Every structure is written in structure tokens, then in C-alpha cells.
Image: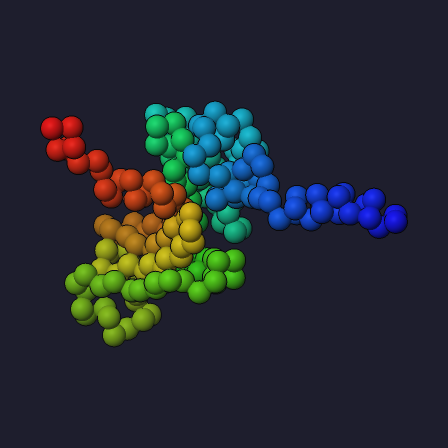
Length: 193
């Protein structure tokens, strides 16, 4: 009889465990869910140091995966739609950026699984292709870009190592797939005719 009296409580606890957390605690990027208001992110982000607020952007500084980083929250119609993490690690040897990329690739793969797409994209620089010891310089010169992509139902993630004019950029972009689809297919201009 005692078990039967506790059955409703046990069922309620089991259902609560199956439901997603409320208030963006699970999150699409860390603790934030896509679509939260800009003020909610501003009020609740405590892991990074606030740096600047722009129109539909919040800029933070902090450490991501052990690297110094700029974290930029982007908003569409004042709702979170994308987060860009720019790694600000400095190196005197451009090859070290490739090692950083590979470390982040491993960490992201550990968390999200094998990338849906992974590629090295060359644009010129044929004289550098056959010597991996100078690929860091090929990246810095804008000849080579490393890319990896993951996605689930709600979020697209892209890791990119690229460069131009001997400046290297390494970053991760998390974006709301629903917002991406809306940008890709704007409403027809003829629908109101």
C-alpha cells in the first residue's frame, strides 16, 4: 500500500527528469538558449568579463578552452541568434595556430561527436601545398583555410582557421539553425501583391 501512495510522486519525479530544464539552463550555447533577450544575456553572463555593448551585440572577454578569447553574442530583433568566439592567442610561429585548431577540433569532437564536414580549402599558394611545415604561413597569407562543422536540430557550429595579409584568425561560431533558415529564405516580395 505504501508503494501505491508514493506512485504519483514517483511518476511526477520521473516526468520532471525527462523534461528539459527551464530558463535556458541547458542552453544552445552554454547556459543560453536561442531566442533569449539581449538583456537576459547581459544580466546572467557571469563567466566572462563584459567589454562592450553595440547595437544587437554584446562583447565579452574571457578564456575558452584555456585560450584568451573575445566572445560576441549577436542578436536578431533583440533575440540571441549567434555566438562567435574569437581566439586571441598570439604566436610567433604560424604553425602553432594549426596546433591550436587541432586542439579545438579535438575538444569540439569530444563534446559534439565527429564533424559533419571537415575540410582544408586552398585558394592559390600551390607552391606551399606540398610542404606541411609552412602551412601556418599559407593560412596567414590567405591561401589555406581549415574548417569543421557540426550541427544538431537547433545549433550549427563552425570552427574556422583562416587568415589574410599575414594575420591569422581562429574562431568558433555557434548559430541558431532556425534563424539561419529564416535569413536564407526571406519572405517573397510578391506575397502581398
